[in-house]
Image (cartoon, rainbow, N blue to C red):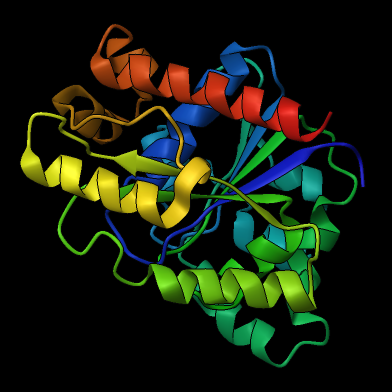
Length: 258
């Protein structure tokens, strides 16, 4: 495999800022002159719509990509951002789980398709479940990033996610590591926000990123316009936070790969 960083953003709990993080980390890393590919593995297609795609624009999707039905390069589309490409999702993805169940080496379909792609970063937006698509993403990845929302029950389900992570690492992909945990929708003025931060720090320690993603109206509304936060309001708190987070990801990876 070429020397690329394949990172799955994963949390089976929905609404934690996973897709928002994939889009804006992708844009920010491309701004830092990296060649970046986003793979939307969620049948809901939120990363695709959040970048501004409509279903009419898609000839081939991540379903075609993962199932190997067409040449990989036909599934990759450029975005408005120089250096950033995407493999869009389609509703067909929901059928991929069923098709993969009885396939030989079913956990390795995505890994095999990524073998010869030449990108600095590949960011995978995983579905909000721990099914075969997510297992394919973990098998193909070097790292995972876990977004956690600063709300009640934030840690609910994380033990199940970590069990899946350990199972994949121990049996399929020994090179898989947790790159970090992002606290999203954080409001430092609230007692709850700081209680969740304390819990995350106790649970994950140094794996918690220093950068926290704030609760920010401009950040929340950007996907409805099909825009990244940098296109919607580059001076917002959300934009500044994702820029800082992307630099922290870059630095953390540089340190790990020395």
